[in-house]
Length: 317
Ligand code: GDP
Ligand code: ZN
Image (cartoon, rainbow, N blue to C red; front, side, top):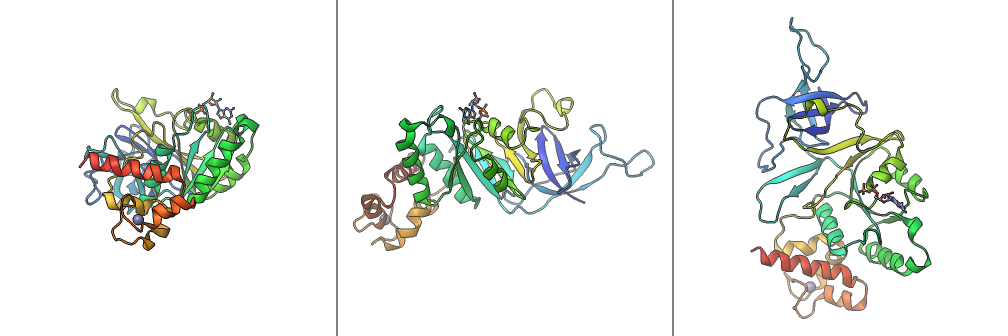
């Protein structure tokens, strides 16, 4: 039988047979590794897996319980996945989520102030893994007239790069219906630094969901040293959310110097016109990307993030 992984805590997993939400516990049976994967977790939230139900004393099929869990026997091929690496130098990686339909990156102009280079790293990560992104600008209720320039500039930078930007407020309710609509029928990754209002937005989308109130308490399953990783929630209005608390390191992907520009969509669009191939879009004459930055069709902020990523990449080589 096939199921989807909803939560992973220590050696235990919570599965459901979508579109049902019939959560039941499971463990891994035997060694399960995806070919070539260096991930510390062979099975991630969002993975589709094959499983067998536990057997009772007489060999009959019984309901899975924490004491007698189902057994995951195989991980089905992933459509995509998002990885987290502890540092650029680290070989080890952790799969945050698999089979994601789209990502919502939540930011705020202020409280906390959005760090564009960090946002751009997250966007590059999503491009690398082929996950469509919407940038969600939360706390719109706070942005009075004194913010209008910064809000407009933010829209221009990211819409200009090709990303939808949607203004929402978990407090006033602005944009929440649209967000709920966008989640319908999809598995959506929610990410953003702490304080941007991720938990508040999830609650606004579905008041029955508090990211700390899972349907089944797994606390009795947790060993002493386990951490709770990522978790999938079902929205009453349809669709699923994977919450990603603590996304430090999320933005780190292993890219070669000349690959980075491929994941800035607005640069990729013009780089065919650069005089040299490959072109790092820094010192080369006849560079179409630099020309676009000068003409204002590629934003200076995005270009700066790109150069920052290039320099960082060089530092580690
Ligand atoms: P998280 O760390 O991203 O999960 O953020 P929280 O949901 O815990 O929110 C952080 C703080 O921002 C809390 O004090 C929330 O009340 C506040 N907050 C969240 N969303 C909004 C919003 O849309 N407008 C305003 N004014 N405050 C918000
Ligand atoms: Zn160039």
